[in-house]
Length: 634
Image 1 (cartoon, rainbow, N blue to C red):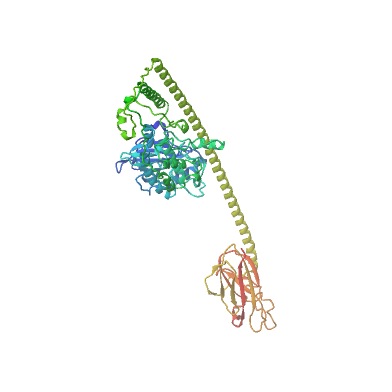
Image 2: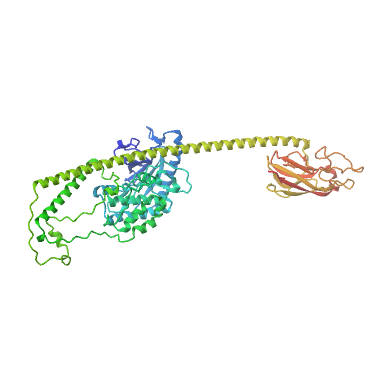
């Protein structure tokens, strides 16, 4: 391929790690394939460069980047998939699929290094020979199926199978190349990149669908289209044209292959092609194994049309010989003119002609002027030759006028064939333009969807950020209110009591009850780790006594004093009775009054402790205990 055909291609002699670019092998919608030389191993390789020309370009310093900011996410997603899927493809080792050696990133893009397969593409063979016999065709397709099966088993599909991408090596073995469009089929994959399809070989789901709607049946369609081309000599009708006809209620323009029209091919092979080319994916075979069963149904050994038995040359009249020679000459002139016109006006493999216009019609057998060698091959038992036959009356030789009429008819047929070829070219051009418009519309729609998704994501992120900020403000407000409440209930200074650690405190997920003894002059652990910002409730039940001269009281301490038991001060939290329940969060914090009930928002983290509010020197004659229940409120 000439470098002028792709302005974004890297120039020759460009180094990529230890590879050196030699020339361009091909280009597609997602990248360019180069012939390069591995300077370490001194051998040629093929390198696929990720360069989606729909939304990326190259700078003068060879760096590849999205052509606009709105395509940045799409480009990054595509590059990531290209590299990840190349790594998976490198694990495949099969003689009939191209070997992926390595993948690396440079110039802000990715490069997939593959084996360079020398040989002729199936497209080149078909351009030269028009069609292939069944035996040779299956010797190419069946090994490719073996290799492709390994790819499908890893949930990957090729997505660009066509005669261009099947190479027949010099030893006759086939290899499937160019996995640059391959991708993994992931259920629910929301990302889609605009697909650059090959008209005639790509099914309709490749024009519009996401990855989850493509699968082995997608590659099977392309394989069927490749066989169709090799059997009929023409490209299949593209999926967009088929879709338009079916939507309008018209017959499918892709004519099915019939054994009567192609007697040299087995019915099983023809039916396998028809099944593979079903418009709807669900109607095709769903796996290569299913399709292979169809391919191998029936006799796939090459057959030849039976020879018609003709009377011996000695029994043919001169007129019949001359007519046969004239018909053969006329057919040669017409076919030669058609071949010359197609060679001059279009590539041999470029027309997607409706099959009905190109199928071979049933022709009467043409007897040549001298068929002695042919007759010698016919078994004598099959020829019913009379012992003698009466001489036939000779008929007049054709006149110059009749020969001129034949030549004029040949010219008319040649002109008609040329006109039909031009019409087909115009139809294909119009179809290509319609396809390009549809692809552009799909690309724009995808861009709109991507922008809408990004806007929706941004809006959700902004809503979440605002919600979190509001929640944080509300939390700080509650903590500030709680600090005022604690200030009213707190001691004026730190106490000097010790701590009783019965268990390791844990954050509270459900209510927990602690037993607080009246006679313990240490802070008793509740087993609860308080967390800042969370809301808690403390409820105390039971009764205790601060000495035999005092009345029993609950956690409030109310009513404990008598004439013999009075307030002598010295409480841990001043201003509350000696028999009150007090608490502490963390060992270095101030104690606070709890009483029978207390709800609060924690202003700090720390273990929760309890004890009675009695004076230090009077604990020894205390008695009783409280059941203190701590519950989370959020």
